[in-house]
Length: 151
Image (cartoon, rainbow, N blue to C red; front, side, top):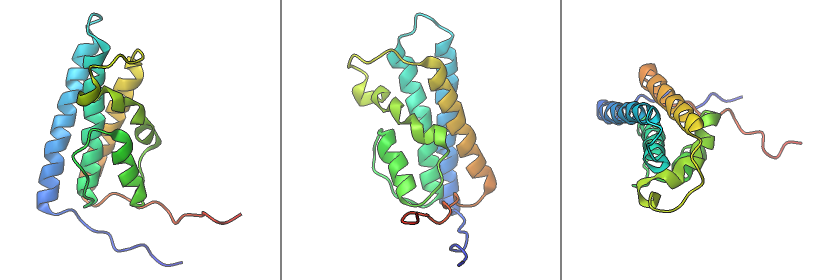
């Protein structure tokens, strides 16, 4: 079995940008927690900050992996880019695609009620994951070789 490609390290510029994104993701999580304490706060405001925290965490991972990504708030698209490049995304974050409608461009539509506990949980998971990637000081991990086609 061949060894995977040699481990690459993010450039100082990539690390700096990833750190900035992570700081902003943590700020969104902080805002989310404050807003959750206010029962009168509307779901669209709470959902927006949850979506933003996850989006920024995914972008931390993409930056560290040296993968270009579009200016997009679509968590589906960002997670797909990550997975399509053979990288491992924690399941809870990959499944966070349901937060996409809470992004800025969609905040004015009527949506189903937000599962606030799930939103804060996935946002916290995403930030923990992005923080671990930054602490590792290496590029995100590749998925093990696919077993597709084997029966």
